[in-house]
Image 1 (tube, rainbow, N blue to C red):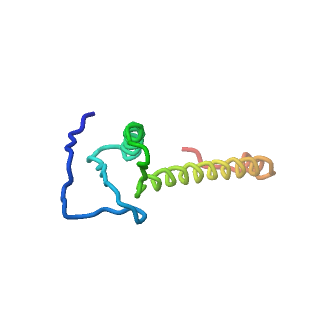
Image 2 (tube, helix red, strand yellow):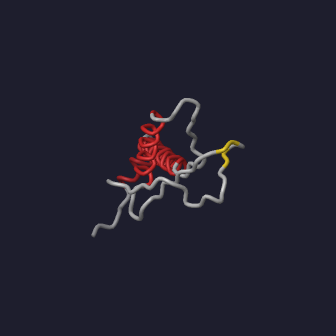
Image 3 (cartoon, rainbow, N blue to C red):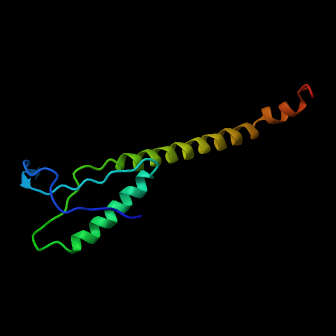
Length: 112
């Protein structure tokens, strides 16, 4: 993966502030077909390398975190899946522990 970077402002007629302090902005754009979580991890890794080179007194902060929603969604899907598996196991256990399981074996079912 390679990137082209140019030093300089896109527009010198604007001022950027973050939490009421002068700031410098950097945008990371996801390309079509790219994995959003991989892009976010790459951004974090690149930022960590850049922070090591900052002069004393300069801090880094992320203003927007779009990909936290992806992580929460994946976590919620996994939790729902585990809950569904648990319900299925409980229903199967309860069904097999009753007389209905024995009765269902004796009921005539049409065969193919």
